[in-house]
Length: 631
Image 1 (cartoon, rainbow, N blue to C red):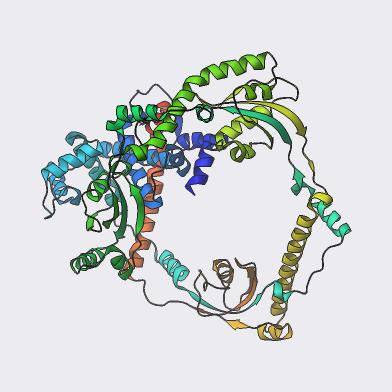
Image 2 (cartoon, rainbow, N blue to C red):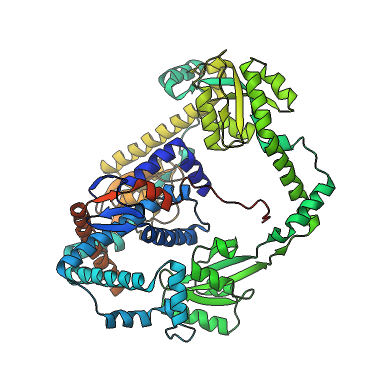
């Protein structure tokens, strides 16, 4: 999934969407994206500022949560595709809207209350559960807080909580809502049904050519060959030049001696953890640890889900507490640590120690790095010479031959996906080259296409094949398969509908099944998710569209049609249990609170400093990489 997100985020469409995500926050009356609200201010809500530091702190916390869920730290582009920046800014702006209201009401919290909350916070306690000053200061420092800013945040959070509790803590949903929720989740239905698959149909013969031609004529818009442009293309980069550069063993050894103090591998650890949802799970896990059981056994016995973060260095772990504890553990040692919600069981299943890299291990990589360095020195000179030759109308193949560059002939379509496989470009680079190709004319000299500081492409257009309708000769076999698939699907749908009509006319399902060689079935009591077999959620949802005696049909995920009649409905008469009741109450209160804060947001209005926001999420910033660091 992350690979697809990365490709999308770097495309033109992804960047356009990203721009809208940054400035289109639900629930806010945004007066504009402005640049005059301070170089350290991401946004302003009313008369209150969201600082660069506050945004980055909240943003990194959210990145950590997402990293724990997906198993890797998202890049800025992926975070943008996930909608993380807008979600964080939305939340911070909502807090500021509430802060304005609490200030108007004169709400606050005493120092004694703050101190009491601080002493009971598990993030600041030692192994015995007592408040530890050193842990407190270290945690604040790692999170970028000063004591004053931390206490101010806590004070404002407590005041916001007073607003929420005062207005919504005693609100209860109406009984009708509870009854509907109970019926929705706990009603069960028994169905009489038959399953119609393609085996229920008579064989379909291959279509005649005139049938296929008529089908093609009716669906010609689906069968068109896109415009294709065939180009001769040459790529220049230090890496390509390096392929024809020699480096002696003496040069490699000298470079190793010069940089050996910087040639090292960083210790990595294979880290996994399991969320412990309640105190009972924590207690059972601790008992299991005392009994000598390993992490995998305990996770399986308690029915928990382990999350594998993979092999990471400490610097790659965005959550400070998790990173510190993981690199303090011995191999396969288990530790219980605080989590985002509740606690987590943490284990390290493999340790690869870091240290200096030997010459034998580093030689190949040093040799390649030296070749690329020499290629980088040659790059500008070669670039200038090819540009001069292009201006003098020297043949592209002649220029390429002079510098041992490969000429490729490639037929490309819009977007240039063919360039990814044929030339090793990434999707963004291929799209950039394609845009120039499709904006050029045959026979015209076109300028080079720079793809960065050290990569350039030249091309000549050889031929343009215009968009056109595909013919029977080209796609006859494909047409036949799709025609037959559509024909079978239509006949199956018509057959299912005919059975429904017969049921509605008074025939029994058993009678219809026997006459057509089908096997009538009776389901177990079904919820809205079905039975995991023929009656999947799509069919079950259709069956919940009416009361007892309701007749219908629906296609399941396997492509079969289920024709059904609702035999009976069982409603739960017992009161909802405490957990479900609490879930409904909380959801109702949260909905009211969300509507309330949305109205506050509209009144407060927000301005965004786009430049500072872009900087805060790390878009467009170069990545610093040490050339001597060999991971």
